[in-house]
Length: 412
Image (cartoon, rainbow, N blue to C red; front, side, top):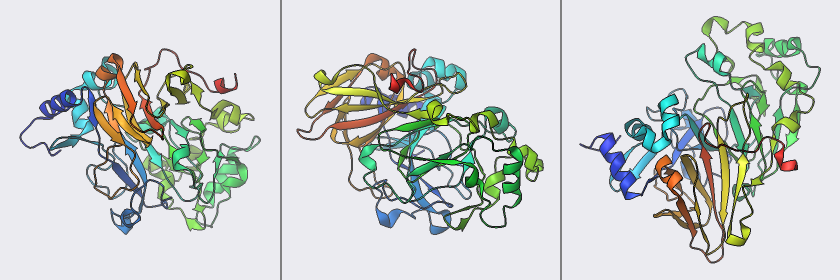
């Protein structure tokens, strides 16, 4: 926090007043030591290793995050989004703690006492290792929370598809626990062969997937917009990717210490019925669904991440396109984190613009947080261009929408 003598509450209230309920956010960059940047985040190439080569390259940008990135050697505020208002700069986490219900809504504040979700751009040049995110029950064993997530592949950021635009999901029907146990047992013998038991799906810009906890997945090389629960737990099940060995510690980093070599326990992290489902795509694949027929009014709002996780609405996301010279006013039932992927204009009274190139540490005008207070009152999105659409992605917290599509509704 860098708000000088002011309290977080005072600084937040002043920022909300100045932005009429909308907060401007600074870019939040996150490195991963075991991955290689895909160079589509618009971060200057000379800044890809701004945290130091030992920390790995920057291949993630987090949006409206109050969740810490669980990296070894991380900075104290790694993963946290910062609010910028005039000369003041302070974390969104501090803002939410100071003005919780006003920012995230009474229902979310009363239940979670925080903003329990975040989203990010994930940008890797090639595939990453087959892994899963633990369930709530499994993550609690190490004092963490489970993590479901959703994917959307923004067309504006995927002109280049990377080295492997395919993602492995789940396990082939007929795969047994003993098959995967043998893979884990030969971790230090090179490629443990776990992908021999999985299926790859070709990725397509403008589509997405819903990924519950305990589902094995090896994401491909498209830049991905990922709304997800506010946790950073994982267990890597693949011992080598693109010829590079994966430290076994990434298999067990969120497993109780006494279970690090209990392969039966680790294999049971997998949701077996869900992973060997013969119609996996039918139950997880997403295509955009228009909220309503508004093209004649100069805009279109579309669901891009939707559906229930174990019967619960954990998060969701929409893509809004405002045509050149048009404007629209949206009344959402809850707060949202917003990123601009094309064009320029205004959101409320704040100017927004999609940058061409960003230097590390540089401020941008492409990200905002719309408070619950502003969302339910109504926020106007206006496109100032005569030629380009204004395109934004916005994600929401849990149980916000009284009605939302389910997976498969795009086929109707």
